Length: 468
Image (cartoon, rainbow, N blue to C red):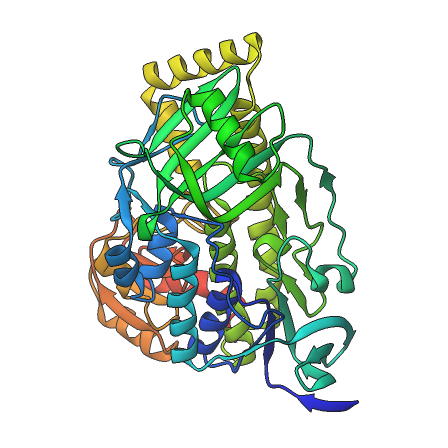
């Protein structure tokens, strides 16, 4: 068995989360290698929705325009398929909408970005095990030319809910097994609805939505647990909607459950987990890909900063306490949505009517739910009122983070602030801020890292950060 030594970090899994992780590492000056067991990208788009916070993440690296050009903007979303839609138009973001964008195209764009930054991608390489030591992590890999070992400083598992990396690292994945199931068919329709359609009644829940290329996604949930066949899709749709819309020429038929699990540790030694490898849930509200990309955004710059000597290794200790609570909340609200989606009994229908009335008569509740589903309400722990808050930036301000380094933002760039920025090797920009505080240090992922009204206050706050 030959041994090959790889630099820096190995990312296992070339889905959206792995590709964005690799891009962040490369942007930060690291030399990431992505290993993907599949020889070719899947032609099926499991995920379709890109939420506002994820568009902000893309904008922080000036990557959003291709997604905006190729996606369909929708001004609202749903919670548990309730009739009362969540209005995104007044959310505090330059992207107050969700983007319908097939995962296939998302992966193509993210791969282009990662490779342009310098990441290396190897397809057809399956990781079979790992071992950790003080100096690094060694992976056992089966590639096109046989078995080999490869060693790196760190490994990031972005290899899905059945993660080999999570299992090999000995990280527990507690939670619940599936009790209800959903169905999905990407098909052509001879009698499609005029636009996206939603149905919910005692027979189940159904969504019919257009896809690129003349296809339609027919998906939902039914008490009968339909099998993933075209005939079953016809029968179920007809039962719920009163018509089957004439499905034919299926491209993809699938079935999924509501198993909900969360990794006990997002980090174990030199091994990290992100995306579905860290959290599994019912695909309610289209949040999975989005939370995974936000995991990657949190982790990537930190690993790169430590590897390039810009930050103390203690910075890596913040990944689990910042992202694990997001995973907890993800499991909670997707389970709540599952309960609403599968509420087909008399009592369940009453619950849905009650919740619908609540959202329609209390817009603040609907807005709070919209901020939760879109991840605009995520805040990380901090030792001051501003620390850890998401910076509600304009699109232009988001672009200031394009180099993947922290930036200083000030209402007025005083000589003392200019000296502080120069000494800390930070870019300083004069701009409007949404808070009374006059100066903030923004992390590469768009959250406040330190704040102060004077250069001295900011310097004191920065002195407490794990900066090298």
